[in-house]
Length: 166
Image (cartoon, rainbow, N blue to C red):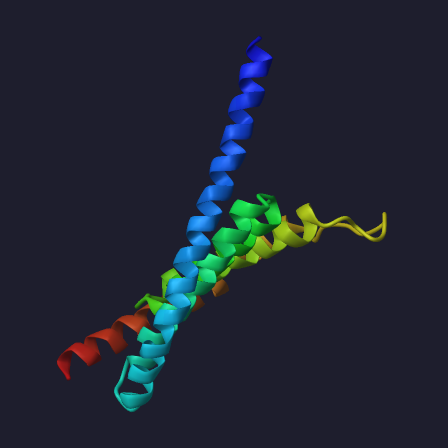
């Protein structure tokens, strides 16, 4: 009896997932249609600083919505990882971030690509091995790399302070 109830609830959840996907499609259609006035606004103000980022933000929202819809229609690890990659890329490109945040975003995307490549896809060759990630991590902890990161953060801080003075 409990198995029948679990199976019924699981089917109800599948139906609700599909209904949410339909709702997302409706929202995406509205967002795509509303992109036309945004494009006209961008074209009229294309010489103003930051207008392209506003337009790009609207486009990224649609792309992320599409990835979310794919995730609802066919929930698997590959679709989830793609959606996460787009979210991180949007944050890094659209948002005002520091060098350290950009570095973390790049590392996050690299890890997601590694998962997608080595954990989700079947390996064409049995002899194919994962790269030695411990060597990469050890190299990232070297004093030279730490000095480069500190130098980049200081440069970014000086650049930010210089902008505030202007």
